Length: 115
Length: 115
Image (cartoon, rainbow over all chains, first blue to last red; front, side):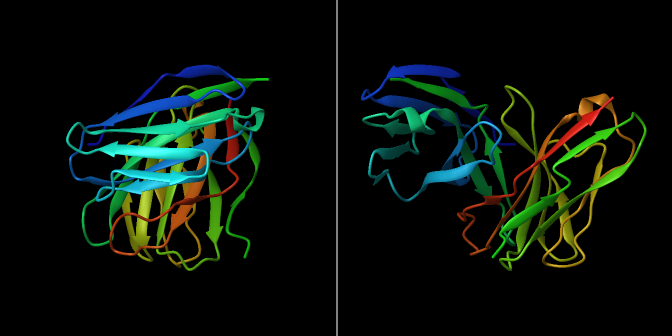
């Protein structure tokens, strides 16, 4: 099955600095890579995603890059703000046909933005 | 739309008891899934369903049963609760475009403690 590794497990940055979280995956059949943000006691919420036919995607201060050859993808947050503090999860989804697919998550990165 | 709803929000069980966690969605999504979230482990897939009458196992299915009699509902049954099943359980759903690259929407979660 798919295996997703996520680093670092914790990350502290000063407000205004950039934060980068990296993930690797093992299954070359994976074709969808979402990133979720989870605030304490809340449900995971999608913040950005990228499909395997795209190398980079940006949404305001958040960007994701994908290197299919190396099987790794990264989340970049620029101009960090205190409200960016949360746990971030990467995930990889492999499609096995007939509408069947499984989403495998990394173990999460706790981001703390220091004012 | 209510989105994805889960009941109960909190539950305490004694070892050996059984119970059903309820999940419902009103978005007419074909794909539904159950995850458990443990500290430092990310979210792990328990079972999933690609449509009414069709279910399949995920990464950690042991000790859990599911059924999907309607598009809207996807209950998770714990047959004989064990302390190792203490966790936060999330239900999720997504539209199936046939590409395997569809956003999953999460419910608010059920916090289960087994003593």
